[in-house]
Length: 90
Image (cartoon, rainbow, N blue to C red; front, side, top):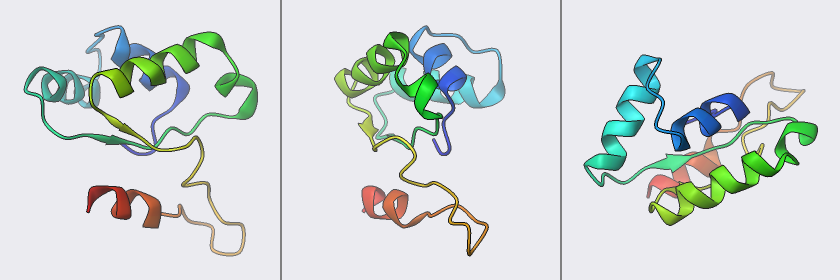
């Protein structure tokens, strides 16, 4: 899942499926499918205890959790940096 916002990650670990994407992610957890998540939360939200706890939960479920904002938009390119996600899928 990329980019995965503060809201999406916290809803996901709570088992909320109020969007199509969250429904698919929750089913993937139940099916024990391999998942990579690229969190994308600004520093003030990433510092929230619920966010840290949610990332730990995902890791415990076997989700490969990349560092927060590893895909941050590069100003010169104005696009997400997808290489870390592609490398994690290999």
